[in-house]
Length: 483
Image (cartoon, rainbow, N blue to C red; front, side, top):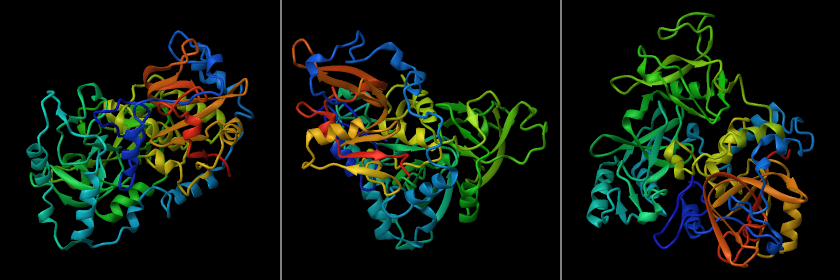
Protein backbone atom coordinates (compact mmCIF):
# COMPACT_ATOMS: atom_id res chain seq x y z
CA UNK A 1 0.00 0.00 0.00
CA UNK A 2 1.07 3.51 0.08
CA UNK A 3 0.81 6.38 2.42
CA UNK A 4 1.45 10.03 1.76
CA UNK A 5 1.76 13.50 2.76
CA UNK A 6 2.54 16.33 5.05
CA UNK A 7 0.60 19.50 4.27
CA UNK A 8 3.72 21.13 2.91
CA UNK A 9 4.17 18.47 0.25
CA UNK A 10 2.26 17.53 -2.85
CA UNK A 11 1.54 13.95 -3.88
CA UNK A 12 3.95 12.19 -6.13
CA UNK A 13 4.86 8.52 -6.22
CA UNK A 14 3.97 6.58 -3.13
CA UNK A 15 4.34 3.12 -1.69
CA UNK A 16 3.05 0.79 1.03
CA UNK A 17 3.06 -0.31 4.60
CA UNK A 18 5.90 -1.93 6.47
CA UNK A 19 6.67 -3.17 9.97
CA UNK A 20 7.04 0.00 11.99
CA UNK A 21 5.98 1.95 8.89
CA UNK A 22 9.14 4.02 8.70
CA UNK A 23 8.84 3.62 4.95
CA UNK A 24 5.82 5.90 5.05
CA UNK A 25 7.77 8.75 6.55
CA UNK A 26 10.36 8.46 3.80
CA UNK A 27 7.68 8.25 1.18
CA UNK A 28 6.10 11.47 2.33
CA UNK A 29 9.28 13.35 1.62
CA UNK A 30 9.12 12.03 -1.95
CA UNK A 31 5.45 12.66 -2.50
CA UNK A 32 5.91 15.89 -4.36
CA UNK A 33 7.41 14.91 -7.66
CA UNK A 34 7.01 11.78 -9.59
CA UNK A 35 9.67 10.17 -11.79
CA UNK A 36 13.17 10.32 -13.21
CA UNK A 37 15.12 12.27 -15.77
CA UNK A 38 17.17 11.26 -18.77
CA UNK A 39 20.77 11.99 -19.54
CA UNK A 40 19.70 14.39 -22.31
CA UNK A 41 16.27 15.71 -21.35
CA UNK A 42 16.39 18.37 -24.05
CA UNK A 43 16.07 15.59 -26.65
CA UNK A 44 12.87 14.19 -25.17
CA UNK A 45 9.69 15.07 -27.03
CA UNK A 46 6.55 15.53 -24.97
CA UNK A 47 3.34 13.85 -26.13
CA UNK A 48 -0.01 15.69 -26.10
CA UNK A 49 -0.83 13.79 -22.90
CA UNK A 50 2.05 15.54 -21.15
CA UNK A 51 4.17 12.38 -20.89
CA UNK A 52 7.64 12.53 -22.48
CA UNK A 53 8.89 10.00 -25.06
CA UNK A 54 5.49 8.36 -25.32
CA UNK A 55 3.18 7.16 -28.09
CA UNK A 56 -0.36 5.78 -27.94
CA UNK A 57 0.63 2.29 -29.10
CA UNK A 58 2.63 1.89 -25.89
CA UNK A 59 -0.66 1.54 -24.01
CA UNK A 60 -1.16 -1.98 -25.37
CA UNK A 61 0.49 -4.96 -23.66
CA UNK A 62 0.99 -6.53 -27.09
CA UNK A 63 3.31 -3.67 -28.03
CA UNK A 64 5.66 -4.78 -25.24
CA UNK A 65 5.08 -8.52 -25.63
CA UNK A 66 6.29 -8.30 -29.23
CA UNK A 67 9.53 -6.72 -27.97
CA UNK A 68 10.07 -9.12 -25.09
CA UNK A 69 12.64 -11.89 -25.54
CA UNK A 70 10.99 -15.34 -25.44
CA UNK A 71 7.74 -13.89 -24.05
CA UNK A 72 6.17 -17.30 -23.36
CA UNK A 73 9.22 -18.87 -21.71
CA UNK A 74 8.48 -20.04 -18.16
CA UNK A 75 10.94 -18.09 -15.99
CA UNK A 76 10.32 -19.95 -12.73
CA UNK A 77 8.52 -23.28 -12.57
CA UNK A 78 5.77 -24.11 -10.06
CA UNK A 79 8.22 -25.60 -7.56
CA UNK A 80 10.47 -22.55 -7.67
CA UNK A 81 7.49 -20.21 -7.30
CA UNK A 82 6.25 -22.17 -4.27
CA UNK A 83 9.71 -21.95 -2.69
CA UNK A 84 9.66 -18.16 -3.19
CA UNK A 85 6.29 -17.97 -1.43
CA UNK A 86 7.72 -19.83 1.54
CA UNK A 87 10.73 -17.50 1.68
CA UNK A 88 8.43 -14.47 1.74
CA UNK A 89 7.23 -15.61 5.17
CA UNK A 90 10.72 -16.40 6.42
CA UNK A 91 13.42 -14.17 7.94
CA UNK A 92 13.54 -10.80 6.18
CA UNK A 93 10.96 -11.95 3.64
CA UNK A 94 8.65 -9.06 4.48
CA UNK A 95 5.51 -11.01 5.43
CA UNK A 96 4.45 -12.27 8.86
CA UNK A 97 3.96 -16.01 9.36
CA UNK A 98 0.94 -15.89 11.64
CA UNK A 99 1.08 -19.64 12.32
CA UNK A 100 4.39 -19.13 14.12
CA UNK A 101 3.28 -16.21 16.23
CA UNK A 102 3.93 -17.05 19.89
CA UNK A 103 0.99 -17.38 22.24
CA UNK A 104 -0.10 -16.23 24.74
CA UNK A 105 0.11 -12.62 23.64
CA UNK A 106 1.50 -10.30 26.30
CA UNK A 107 0.33 -6.82 27.21
CA UNK A 108 3.64 -5.21 26.26
CA UNK A 109 3.64 -7.02 22.92
CA UNK A 110 0.11 -5.97 21.97
CA UNK A 111 0.54 -2.43 23.28
CA UNK A 112 3.65 -2.11 21.14
CA UNK A 113 1.69 -3.23 18.08
CA UNK A 114 -1.04 -0.70 18.81
CA UNK A 115 1.58 2.05 19.05
CA UNK A 116 3.21 0.90 15.80
CA UNK A 117 -0.15 0.91 14.02
CA UNK A 118 -0.72 4.56 14.95
CA UNK A 119 2.48 5.73 13.23
CA UNK A 120 1.06 7.35 10.12
CA UNK A 121 3.11 9.69 7.92
CA UNK A 122 0.08 11.73 6.90
CA UNK A 123 -0.71 14.50 9.32
CA UNK A 124 -4.31 14.75 10.42
CA UNK A 125 -4.95 18.45 9.81
CA UNK A 126 -8.52 18.61 8.44
CA UNK A 127 -11.49 16.25 8.52
CA UNK A 128 -13.89 15.30 5.72
CA UNK A 129 -15.79 18.56 6.17
CA UNK A 130 -12.58 20.55 5.89
CA UNK A 131 -12.67 21.46 9.57
CA UNK A 132 -9.51 21.51 11.71
CA UNK A 133 -8.61 18.30 13.50
CA UNK A 134 -8.00 18.98 17.17
CA UNK A 135 -5.87 17.03 19.60
CA UNK A 136 -9.05 16.31 21.55
CA UNK A 137 -10.55 14.58 18.50
CA UNK A 138 -7.49 12.39 18.07
CA UNK A 139 -7.32 11.63 21.77
CA UNK A 140 -10.90 10.41 21.66
CA UNK A 141 -9.92 7.89 18.98
CA UNK A 142 -6.88 6.81 20.98
CA UNK A 143 -9.10 6.24 24.01
CA UNK A 144 -11.25 3.96 21.88
CA UNK A 145 -8.12 1.84 21.40
CA UNK A 146 -8.49 0.97 25.11
CA UNK A 147 -4.87 -0.02 25.63
CA UNK A 148 -5.41 0.09 29.40
CA UNK A 149 -7.70 -2.94 29.03
CA UNK A 150 -5.14 -5.16 27.30
CA UNK A 151 -4.70 -8.16 29.62
CA UNK A 152 -1.32 -9.08 31.03
CA UNK A 153 -1.44 -12.22 28.91
CA UNK A 154 -4.09 -13.80 26.72
CA UNK A 155 -4.23 -16.63 24.20
CA UNK A 156 -4.11 -15.66 20.56
CA UNK A 157 -7.43 -15.79 18.71
CA UNK A 158 -7.76 -16.31 14.99
CA UNK A 159 -10.01 -15.20 12.18
CA UNK A 160 -10.53 -14.81 8.47
CA UNK A 161 -11.64 -11.65 6.68
CA UNK A 162 -14.99 -12.14 4.99
CA UNK A 163 -14.86 -9.22 2.54
CA UNK A 164 -12.55 -6.56 1.14
CA UNK A 165 -12.06 -4.34 4.16
CA UNK A 166 -9.71 -1.48 5.09
CA UNK A 167 -7.00 -1.69 7.71
CA UNK A 168 -6.89 1.36 9.95
CA UNK A 169 -4.29 3.06 12.10
CA UNK A 170 -6.92 3.81 14.77
CA UNK A 171 -10.31 2.21 15.46
CA UNK A 172 -12.38 4.65 13.44
CA UNK A 173 -13.87 5.26 10.01
CA UNK A 174 -13.29 8.99 10.37
CA UNK A 175 -11.24 10.42 7.53
CA UNK A 176 -8.47 12.95 8.06
CA UNK A 177 -6.20 14.68 5.57
CA UNK A 178 -3.05 16.77 5.61
CA UNK A 179 -4.55 19.51 3.43
CA UNK A 180 -7.55 20.29 1.24
CA UNK A 181 -5.57 19.50 -1.90
CA UNK A 182 -4.32 16.16 -0.50
CA UNK A 183 -7.59 14.28 -0.18
CA UNK A 184 -6.24 11.34 -2.17
CA UNK A 185 -4.18 10.43 0.90
CA UNK A 186 -6.10 9.66 4.07
CA UNK A 187 -4.31 9.74 7.38
CA UNK A 188 -5.69 6.58 9.01
CA UNK A 189 -5.67 4.29 5.96
CA UNK A 190 -3.23 1.46 6.59
CA UNK A 191 -3.97 -1.01 3.83
CA UNK A 192 -6.53 -3.64 2.94
CA UNK A 193 -7.60 -7.19 3.72
CA UNK A 194 -9.00 -9.31 0.93
CA UNK A 195 -11.61 -12.04 1.50
CA UNK A 196 -10.10 -15.13 3.11
CA UNK A 197 -7.01 -13.51 4.62
CA UNK A 198 -5.98 -14.75 8.08
CA UNK A 199 -5.56 -12.55 11.14
CA UNK A 200 -4.48 -12.98 14.73
CA UNK A 201 -6.99 -11.17 16.95
CA UNK A 202 -5.11 -9.43 19.75
CA UNK A 203 -7.49 -6.85 21.24
CA UNK A 204 -10.75 -4.96 20.72
CA UNK A 205 -11.84 -1.32 20.88
CA UNK A 206 -13.75 0.18 23.78
CA UNK A 207 -16.87 0.53 21.62
CA UNK A 208 -16.42 -3.13 20.53
CA UNK A 209 -16.87 -2.23 16.85
CA UNK A 210 -13.21 -2.81 15.99
CA UNK A 211 -10.72 -5.63 16.37
CA UNK A 212 -7.02 -5.03 16.68
CA UNK A 213 -5.30 -7.67 14.57
CA UNK A 214 -1.93 -8.81 13.43
CA UNK A 215 -1.96 -9.57 9.70
CA UNK A 216 0.62 -10.97 7.32
CA UNK A 217 1.33 -7.31 6.51
CA UNK A 218 1.57 -5.96 10.06
CA UNK A 219 -0.72 -4.72 12.86
CA UNK A 220 -3.88 -2.66 12.30
CA UNK A 221 -7.49 -2.16 13.29
CA UNK A 222 -10.27 -3.78 11.28
CA UNK A 223 -14.06 -3.66 11.56
CA UNK A 224 -15.31 -6.49 13.76
CA UNK A 225 -18.17 -7.18 11.32
CA UNK A 226 -15.63 -7.99 8.58
CA UNK A 227 -13.80 -10.76 10.47
CA UNK A 228 -15.10 -14.22 11.39
CA UNK A 229 -13.41 -15.84 14.39
CA UNK A 230 -12.50 -19.51 14.35
CA UNK A 231 -9.96 -21.99 15.61
CA UNK A 232 -6.38 -21.83 14.44
CA UNK A 233 -6.90 -25.14 12.66
CA UNK A 234 -9.99 -23.91 10.80
CA UNK A 235 -8.30 -20.66 9.77
CA UNK A 236 -4.96 -22.04 8.62
CA UNK A 237 -6.34 -25.18 6.98
CA UNK A 238 -8.52 -22.93 4.81
CA UNK A 239 -5.54 -20.77 3.87
CA UNK A 240 -3.50 -23.87 3.03
CA UNK A 241 -6.05 -25.32 0.60
CA UNK A 242 -4.95 -25.55 -3.01
CA UNK A 243 -6.41 -22.79 -5.18
CA UNK A 244 -9.55 -23.79 -7.02
CA UNK A 245 -9.77 -20.46 -8.83
CA UNK A 246 -7.31 -17.57 -8.85
CA UNK A 247 -8.56 -14.11 -9.76
CA UNK A 248 -6.62 -12.98 -12.83
CA UNK A 249 -8.68 -9.90 -13.68
CA UNK A 250 -8.19 -6.55 -11.97
CA UNK A 251 -11.32 -7.30 -9.97
CA UNK A 252 -14.19 -9.77 -10.30
CA UNK A 253 -17.32 -10.42 -8.25
CA UNK A 254 -19.08 -13.52 -7.10
CA UNK A 255 -22.52 -14.15 -8.57
CA UNK A 256 -25.35 -12.20 -6.95
CA UNK A 257 -27.46 -14.36 -4.66
CA UNK A 258 -30.23 -13.17 -2.32
CA UNK A 259 -30.20 -16.61 -0.67
CA UNK A 260 -26.66 -16.07 0.68
CA UNK A 261 -25.93 -12.34 1.10
CA UNK A 262 -22.61 -13.07 2.81
CA UNK A 263 -21.11 -14.34 -0.44
CA UNK A 264 -23.16 -12.27 -2.88
CA UNK A 265 -21.26 -9.95 -5.25
CA UNK A 266 -18.10 -10.10 -3.17
CA UNK A 267 -15.27 -8.05 -4.65
CA UNK A 268 -12.22 -10.19 -5.37
CA UNK A 269 -9.01 -8.48 -6.44
CA UNK A 270 -6.26 -9.83 -8.66
CA UNK A 271 -4.35 -12.67 -7.06
CA UNK A 272 -7.03 -13.72 -4.57
CA UNK A 273 -6.99 -17.54 -4.54
CA UNK A 274 -10.09 -19.43 -3.44
CA UNK A 275 -10.42 -23.17 -2.81
CA UNK A 276 -12.86 -25.19 -4.86
CA UNK A 277 -16.21 -25.94 -3.24
CA UNK A 278 -17.25 -29.58 -3.06
CA UNK A 279 -20.19 -29.33 -5.44
CA UNK A 280 -21.31 -31.95 -7.93
CA UNK A 281 -21.50 -30.86 -11.60
CA UNK A 282 -24.70 -28.95 -12.17
CA UNK A 283 -25.66 -28.99 -8.48
CA UNK A 284 -27.45 -25.75 -7.48
CA UNK A 285 -25.52 -23.32 -5.32
CA UNK A 286 -27.48 -20.60 -3.52
CA UNK A 287 -30.46 -20.96 -5.82
CA UNK A 288 -28.57 -21.16 -9.14
CA UNK A 289 -27.13 -24.00 -11.18
CA UNK A 290 -23.37 -24.33 -11.02
CA UNK A 291 -22.96 -25.69 -14.54
CA UNK A 292 -21.96 -22.34 -16.07
CA UNK A 293 -19.92 -21.12 -13.10
CA UNK A 294 -17.05 -22.18 -10.87
CA UNK A 295 -18.08 -23.17 -7.31
CA UNK A 296 -15.66 -21.76 -4.73
CA UNK A 297 -15.54 -21.83 -0.95
CA UNK A 298 -15.58 -18.59 1.05
CA UNK A 299 -15.49 -17.74 4.76
CA UNK A 300 -18.61 -16.17 6.23
CA UNK A 301 -19.41 -14.64 9.60
CA UNK A 302 -22.22 -16.14 11.61
CA UNK A 303 -24.46 -13.88 13.69
CA UNK A 304 -22.41 -14.59 16.79
CA UNK A 305 -19.20 -13.66 14.95
CA UNK A 306 -17.93 -17.20 14.50
CA UNK A 307 -16.40 -18.63 11.36
CA UNK A 308 -18.28 -20.77 8.87
CA UNK A 309 -17.80 -21.56 5.20
CA UNK A 310 -20.20 -21.24 2.30
CA UNK A 311 -20.14 -22.06 -1.39
CA UNK A 312 -20.38 -19.29 -3.94
CA UNK A 313 -20.23 -19.04 -7.71
CA UNK A 314 -17.78 -17.31 -10.04
CA UNK A 315 -19.03 -17.00 -13.60
CA UNK A 316 -16.96 -18.96 -16.10
CA UNK A 317 -16.70 -15.78 -18.15
CA UNK A 318 -15.04 -13.95 -15.24
CA UNK A 319 -11.30 -13.40 -15.52
CA UNK A 320 -10.04 -16.27 -13.34
CA UNK A 321 -7.76 -19.29 -13.75
CA UNK A 322 -7.66 -22.79 -12.22
CA UNK A 323 -4.38 -21.95 -10.50
CA UNK A 324 -1.62 -19.37 -10.52
CA UNK A 325 -0.66 -18.28 -14.02
CA UNK A 326 2.67 -19.47 -15.45
CA UNK A 327 5.41 -16.97 -14.71
CA UNK A 328 6.21 -15.70 -18.21
CA UNK A 329 7.08 -12.24 -19.51
CA UNK A 330 3.88 -12.20 -21.57
CA UNK A 331 1.76 -12.96 -18.50
CA UNK A 332 3.55 -10.32 -16.40
CA UNK A 333 2.77 -7.72 -19.04
CA UNK A 334 -0.83 -8.76 -19.62
CA UNK A 335 -1.55 -8.81 -15.89
CA UNK A 336 0.05 -5.41 -15.25
CA UNK A 337 -1.81 -3.77 -18.13
CA UNK A 338 -5.17 -4.89 -16.72
CA UNK A 339 -4.73 -2.07 -14.19
CA UNK A 340 -3.84 0.56 -16.78
CA UNK A 341 -5.77 3.77 -16.15
CA UNK A 342 -7.01 2.74 -12.71
CA UNK A 343 -7.01 5.69 -10.32
CA UNK A 344 -4.25 5.80 -7.74
CA UNK A 345 -5.55 4.44 -4.44
CA UNK A 346 -3.44 5.13 -1.36
CA UNK A 347 -3.59 2.03 0.83
CA UNK A 348 -6.13 0.51 -1.60
CA UNK A 349 -8.52 3.44 -1.23
CA UNK A 350 -11.12 4.14 -3.95
CA UNK A 351 -11.54 0.41 -4.56
CA UNK A 352 -8.11 0.55 -6.20
CA UNK A 353 -4.46 0.19 -5.18
CA UNK A 354 -1.19 2.12 -5.02
CA UNK A 355 2.28 1.51 -6.46
CA UNK A 356 3.25 -1.49 -4.37
CA UNK A 357 -0.31 -2.81 -4.47
CA UNK A 358 0.01 -2.86 -8.25
CA UNK A 359 3.26 -4.83 -8.25
CA UNK A 360 2.27 -7.22 -5.47
CA UNK A 361 -1.10 -8.10 -7.02
CA UNK A 362 0.34 -8.66 -10.47
CA UNK A 363 2.85 -11.11 -9.03
CA UNK A 364 0.34 -12.71 -6.67
CA UNK A 365 -1.71 -13.78 -9.68
CA UNK A 366 1.49 -15.51 -10.88
CA UNK A 367 2.03 -17.23 -7.53
CA UNK A 368 4.69 -14.93 -6.05
CA UNK A 369 3.98 -13.11 -2.78
CA UNK A 370 5.60 -9.69 -2.41
CA UNK A 371 5.57 -7.54 0.73
CA UNK A 372 2.89 -4.84 0.64
CA UNK A 373 5.29 -1.88 0.69
CA UNK A 374 7.95 -0.71 -1.72
CA UNK A 375 10.72 -0.56 0.85
CA UNK A 376 10.41 -4.24 1.71
CA UNK A 377 9.89 -5.18 -1.93
CA UNK A 378 13.30 -3.63 -2.52
CA UNK A 379 15.05 -5.88 0.00
CA UNK A 380 12.85 -8.93 0.66
CA UNK A 381 14.90 -12.09 1.08
CA UNK A 382 12.36 -13.86 -1.12
CA UNK A 383 13.81 -12.18 -4.22
CA UNK A 384 17.11 -11.31 -5.84
CA UNK A 385 18.30 -7.70 -5.80
CA UNK A 386 20.94 -5.38 -7.10
CA UNK A 387 21.23 -2.83 -4.30
CA UNK A 388 22.48 0.72 -4.90
CA UNK A 389 24.17 3.19 -2.59
CA UNK A 390 25.59 6.68 -2.96
CA UNK A 391 28.84 5.11 -4.18
CA UNK A 392 27.15 3.84 -7.37
CA UNK A 393 27.69 6.28 -10.21
CA UNK A 394 25.08 7.52 -12.65
CA UNK A 395 26.77 5.51 -15.40
CA UNK A 396 26.63 2.31 -13.33
CA UNK A 397 22.94 2.87 -12.68
CA UNK A 398 22.26 3.44 -16.37
CA UNK A 399 24.03 0.20 -17.25
CA UNK A 400 21.91 -1.68 -14.69
CA UNK A 401 18.57 -0.41 -15.98
CA UNK A 402 19.69 -0.98 -19.57
CA UNK A 403 20.04 -4.66 -18.68
CA UNK A 404 16.82 -4.84 -16.66
CA UNK A 405 14.29 -7.46 -17.75
CA UNK A 406 10.53 -7.36 -18.14
CA UNK A 407 9.02 -7.59 -14.66
CA UNK A 408 12.05 -6.27 -12.78
CA UNK A 409 11.19 -3.67 -10.15
CA UNK A 410 12.84 -0.29 -9.73
CA UNK A 411 12.66 0.85 -6.11
CA UNK A 412 13.28 4.42 -4.98
CA UNK A 413 12.50 5.68 -1.47
CA UNK A 414 8.72 5.56 -1.21
CA UNK A 415 7.96 4.21 -4.68
CA UNK A 416 8.22 1.15 -6.89
CA UNK A 417 7.98 0.84 -10.69
CA UNK A 418 7.93 -2.20 -12.99
CA UNK A 419 10.09 -2.53 -16.11
CA UNK A 420 8.01 -3.42 -19.16
CA UNK A 421 10.67 -3.23 -21.87
CA UNK A 422 12.98 -1.01 -23.87
CA UNK A 423 12.48 1.18 -26.93
CA UNK A 424 15.62 2.23 -28.77
CA UNK A 425 17.55 1.17 -25.69
CA UNK A 426 15.49 3.35 -23.32
CA UNK A 427 13.76 1.55 -20.41
CA UNK A 428 10.01 1.97 -19.92
CA UNK A 429 7.93 1.25 -16.84
CA UNK A 430 4.37 0.79 -15.71
CA UNK A 431 3.70 2.50 -12.39
CA UNK A 432 0.86 3.69 -10.18
CA UNK A 433 1.83 7.30 -9.65
CA UNK A 434 0.28 10.71 -8.87
CA UNK A 435 2.65 12.78 -11.06
CA UNK A 436 5.23 12.48 -13.82
CA UNK A 437 7.96 15.07 -13.34
CA UNK A 438 10.55 15.84 -16.00
CA UNK A 439 12.42 18.72 -17.62
CA UNK A 440 10.50 20.46 -20.36
CA UNK A 441 12.68 20.20 -23.49
CA UNK A 442 11.81 23.76 -24.51
CA UNK A 443 12.28 25.64 -21.23
CA UNK A 444 14.52 23.17 -19.36
CA UNK A 445 12.28 23.83 -16.36
CA UNK A 446 10.74 21.04 -14.32
CA UNK A 447 7.31 20.17 -15.60
CA UNK A 448 4.78 18.16 -13.61
CA UNK A 449 2.02 16.18 -15.34
CA UNK A 450 -0.71 14.90 -13.07
CA UNK A 451 -1.38 11.24 -13.79
CA UNK A 452 -2.93 9.89 -10.56
CA UNK A 453 -3.35 6.46 -12.11
CA UNK A 454 -1.58 3.38 -13.40
CA UNK A 455 0.45 4.73 -16.29
CA UNK A 456 3.13 3.84 -18.83
CA UNK A 457 6.14 6.17 -18.83
CA UNK A 458 9.80 6.17 -19.76
CA UNK A 459 12.10 5.75 -16.78
CA UNK A 460 15.10 7.92 -17.55
CA UNK A 461 13.45 11.34 -18.13
CA UNK A 462 11.65 11.31 -14.79
CA UNK A 463 12.57 12.95 -11.49
CA UNK A 464 12.10 11.71 -7.95
CA UNK A 465 12.40 15.23 -6.52
CA UNK A 466 13.44 18.70 -7.66
CA UNK A 467 17.02 17.66 -8.36
CA UNK A 468 17.28 13.88 -8.46
CA UNK A 469 16.40 11.55 -11.30
CA UNK A 470 14.62 8.31 -10.49
CA UNK A 471 17.62 6.39 -11.75
CA UNK A 472 19.88 8.29 -9.34
CA UNK A 473 17.43 7.83 -6.46
CA UNK A 474 17.18 4.09 -7.14
CA UNK A 475 17.98 1.97 -4.08
CA UNK A 476 17.25 -1.44 -5.54
CA UNK A 477 16.71 -3.24 -8.82
CA UNK A 478 14.60 -6.26 -7.91
CA UNK A 479 15.08 -9.21 -10.23
CA UNK A 480 11.81 -10.87 -9.33
CA UNK A 481 11.97 -13.58 -11.98
CA UNK A 482 15.68 -14.36 -11.62
CA UNK A 483 16.24 -17.98 -10.41
